[in-house]
Image (cartoon, rainbow, N blue to C red):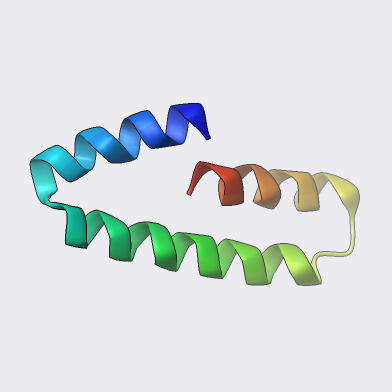
Length: 54
């Protein structure tokens, strides 16, 4: 979350808050849905990492 907030914050300064907010919400939703249906541990961990990144 620390790394993600730094990257998303820099992008929000350059691209605008609304665009970055929409992108992070889409990424969080898609990755959250995928992580809820994954059967194995390592793909689940991978998608949860990106969920925290968003």
